[in-house]
Image (cartoon, rainbow, N blue to C red; front, top):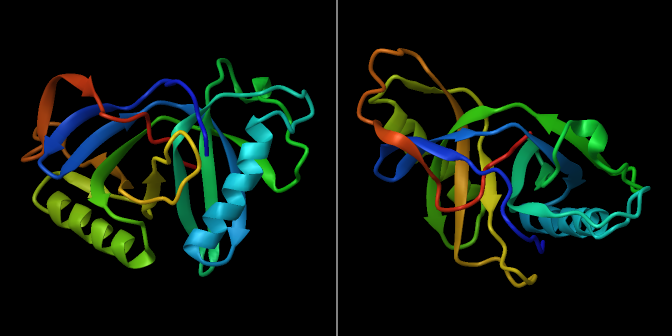
Length: 199
């Protein structure tokens, strides 16, 4: 999906080498659910979401959306795919989709453990990334509390999705006294890429 500009991004609040803990701001998402394999579902979803942000909405407004494209498994062969909209205000400011398959939802701020991987995302590579995150968290006071979200940063123009992707898992801090070996950063810092809003 082609997107422009950067909206509010996430801040890295703790760093554990390959795994970062990021604070994700509240956001507004354009989201769709698609049946099928991981790649095919994402292609279908990107087509729907691209039409919505390109002006196929009841207001006829072209919108800016922020990378990454977010993909999360709902059930076997069923995926939710979303993009973050660069909108100010609440969910009522988002144009209503013409396509009933596209929904506009609000996402509260959240905390995520994130790992970056090379290659194309597959169910197998996502499962291994989730295991690596859980292994890193096992030696800390951070606790995983949700299913993984694949965060894909497509190029400016739609090309085969190769290169790198991220896997994010929602987390909570069990003890405020000691975030442990995931070392808190000084004054926080912006992540290298835009935020990771997920449903």
